[in-house]
Length: 195
Image (cartoon, rainbow, N blue to C red; front, side, top):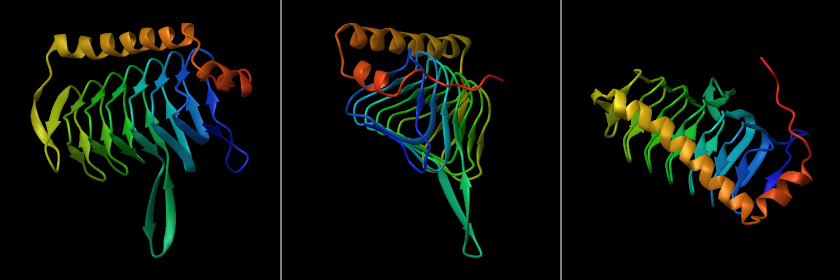
């Protein structure tokens, strides 16, 4: 389902794949060759969400803009996910920033104002708490997430390889006639802002 909210509609690049059972709502940008898989929810009602090129959001993951409250007043937080990022099954990204070429493990949580720096890995089921920064090319595990080790050059390359492989899988779904293509056409040509 692709749905407008408060006059904002998702802007999905024509090469991106959105499975028909995924939900994308509001002020969302989905980049080139990205893929949103079955049951995933990308909900940009509080603030905007940007998903970069070749990034995949796997089954049942949830991406939401954040909300924090001070003296009873809300502050809304955008969610930014870079390019060549893998968001694993059942992960939660909430009002946080994920830089390029990161891996967020299945069932992991990255919460309000947290930042996962380039090339980092958040382990399966790990919880990156509010306002925490995961250093570049570092594996973090546990609840709360704590550094385990530095990732190798080979692991860093593998993240990008896996992200590209997911884009190829998405192309197979397009060729097989997935209803995603029909939904995408309904929204017309993508309107992505250039830097």
